[in-house]
Amino acid sequence: HTSTNKPGAIINLPLSLSILGFFITVISAETQVQFTGQTVFFVNETSTTVIRLVIQRIGVPANITAIVQLEGENTGDFVESVTAAFIPERESNRTVYISVCDDDIPEEDETFKFLLILQHSSLDAKLGLARVATVTILSNDNAFGVISFNMAPFIAVNEPRDRNLSVPLRLIREKGTYGTVTVTFEVNGGPNSPEEDLLPSKGNITFSTGTSLLVYNLTVLDDQIPENDENFTLILTNVFGGAEINSSRSKVQIMIRKNDSPVRFSQSSYMVPETAHVIVIPVIRGKDLTDTAVGSDDVDVSIKYKIVTKNTTASAQLGKDFSDLQPNNTIIFPPKAFEYSLKFQIIDDTIPEIAESFQILLMGDTLQGDAVLLFPDVVTVTIEPNDKPYGVLSINNLEKM
Image (cartoon, rainbow, N blue to C red; front, side, top):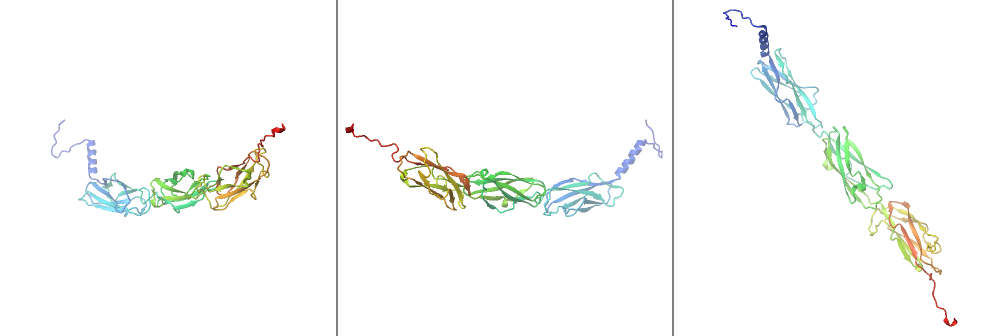
């Protein structure tokens, strides 16, 4: 359809086109203010950290004053929590800078929001969609702590007797205490394998959130093995959960003093003539079978003995074939004493006898002091055949036959 419009004539447009034209006019006449560019930041807490925010004006040119303000309470993490930017009519954007405050306070990851606000805005100036900037300051100033020992670097302990012993290890988590952190440790040294004397020889120690002091118990075992001084080193080896290890206080030396002095006879058997008169049976303390000193020697050690005989012709009888010359049956080793002599008298009679023996037994259940009973703990003493036990063979005078 074609129509000719005369000058001054009224043009009739469809209603839909009239409404569209109205909205185009309104939108084109509006001024919008918003952030442009980066609005999400992850930064470290340093004195040189600065967040750069660009504020953009679009639409109808106008003088605009925009405010960038920290949402919520001012925690002191930024040098300024509020800043303003003026965008004159002839320009379209302004940049504001927000400096991070390096406060030396241990903190975990913290997220903040900065809001864009218009100051004294007219009805024609509005905020766009990008009106919030998010800033995350990463954990800083050892927020999860620095782990170390909080005790003397050297401790000496005695191996317990007939029980185990707990050794408390005191640890400290300095600076921050955010989150759960776990530190691993292991024990080195010897000369024996650490697990023979200490449990556990490796493991984990866990600090829960907010915990700064912790006591971890290590167990010293009663192994009943003769040993000289043993030196072990417990080392903090690794840490999980964001914490660090203070390398200057990451070790503790543990010395287990020499212990479990061996008690035994010097040998397990003796063969003596009936004419020996007095025999000496040495009992040894604090030396192994190679005569090397081992175990503790600075305390009293005592043990009882008993004599064992049998009612047979091959058994020597107490009081008839031999005598016990000790005033009692208790053997006592004072400190630094390594040998005790048991003395027995062999009775020399005129009765023909075959070899006869008796035994001396160290009684382990009577052992007192830091000592253990080792082989040989029984000695057999044999009196040689004597006084012609098998008779005398002779030939009678043949002339009388």
